[in-house]
Amino acid sequence: MKKTTTPSFITELPLRTTPVQESTILVRLDTGRQLYNACLGESLKRLGLILQSKEYQPIKKLPKMIEDKPNKARTVAFNKLNQKYGFREYDIHHYATGIRNSWINEHIGIHIAQKIATRAFHAVQKKAFGTAKNVRFKGKNQFDSLEGKNNQTGLIFQDNILYWSVSRAKQTAIGWRNPSSFGFNRNPEPERSHVKPVTSISEAMDVVIRTDGSHRELI
Image (cartoon, rainbow, N blue to C red):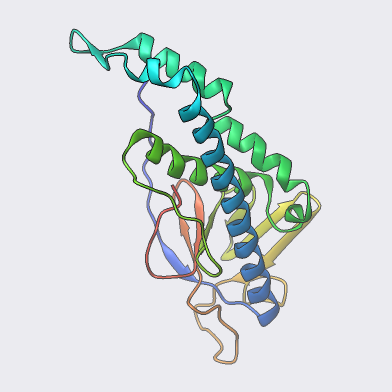
């Protein structure tokens, strides 16, 4: 079934933050980087197990098309192989949830963690499909974006304030109105602190925080 879409748009706005809030953002971005690298490494490990398995080569040799139609038997066989070795998006979500039950839990919420896992899995999946030669682990200060699933949990943009919820019991707001809010000021005060390079939010189907001008998408 074809995936349905809804009308969407992207807008970017600069965040107004205090130095403490800048530090919070950078810590969470680096936590996301470490979680991404862990999920990337685990995905590569599981792909390696598939490539080394006895089942892989016979399945690979099956014809991709039969009478100008995709070979369903080949697809089913690969799906079963992926399931056996846990090389599915759901499996990497489960892995991310497991390792998040540590110090990571203090900085990254479950929905953002799952989006990070999806990003890592899709990177390795491209390698499996042959559309990418290799994947790269992220070094310090090389992970510059985080993404939530919607505007109701995790990252919430409401009334010119960006709320960043790590859990139901802990929510941080960042902005210009007071020291505990992330927000946007149409008449910015020059003495206020900024995240440099500029941190912005993009609102479409998801909310994305970026800290550079490269406009790189998460997935």
